[in-house]
Picture (cartoon, rainbow, N blue to C red):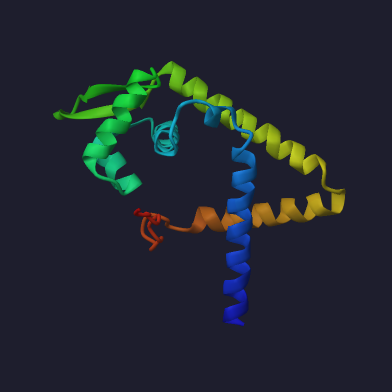
Length: 159
């Protein structure tokens, strides 16, 4: 029974990843000159408001020097700004500019349009099932302490 659960979880995870790839092929933000890491920084900032470079380093599991380079390029694109932390002048906080907020909004809106189009191709019975399962998944997600749980770190690949 445990083996079947693991296989089902793996199939679901792979399907979600593959669905993300299909959607990503049509995302307007990915057509820009942004890298995946730059996009991750924008998404983190859209959720957090502002963060320090150290916070980004920990969340992305990369070195502070790498974060600095990513943020420098995003500043150059006019998508983020740095400002002094009012509570600790040694810390620089990073936040989205209006252009960064617009870029994330456009990316999100495009994704939602694509998802809606996908849903419109399903029959009513399937939509009922997905709505029920989505509600259950959301309820479980809201009950999990993701910060305290062991979540595998992203794999890094070397040449």
